[in-house]
Amino acid sequence: MDAWKSWIEWLLSWRERLFGPAQIAQTDRETSTDAFLRQFPRPPGDNGRGVHWAHSTSRWGQNDWGFWKEQIQAMNLKWVKVLDDGGGSALGLVKRLVDLQVMPVVRFYRLEPNPGVISSGVIELARRYVELGAVYF
Image (tube, rainbow, N blue to C red; front, side, top):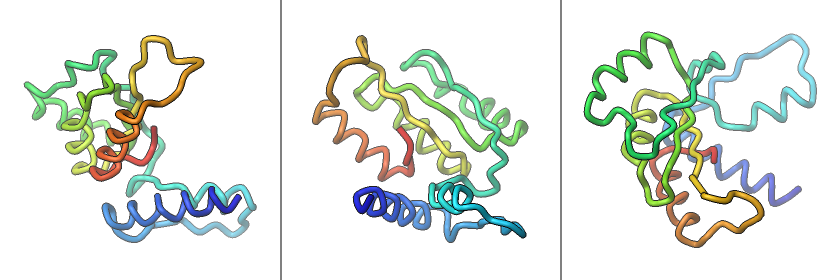
């Protein structure tokens, strides 16, 4: 459990660096589950609204970002799941989403996902995503 606590504290420190202090809605009655879930980073103004982005790792709207930015804002999206090819193909998109205060969830494409191990290259890539503001993989 100590490892989880350390990991959660580390994630929270990144959230506060990127988005400022957490804005947590207080309720009259709190359960231990509510308190536990609030420890996980959420985007500012989280409304639970999100989408899966493109099924492709190479076409994510970079050529017409203005259009997609307007769509994300018009739909008031707060979560977007993106697909990375294992080589950083979604780094630009993740940066743009974080700039919009949208929480990216990064999936690393693997030809055969299970069973398997995460390579050191993907671990290093995940660190790059964390530096941009991604905390969920």
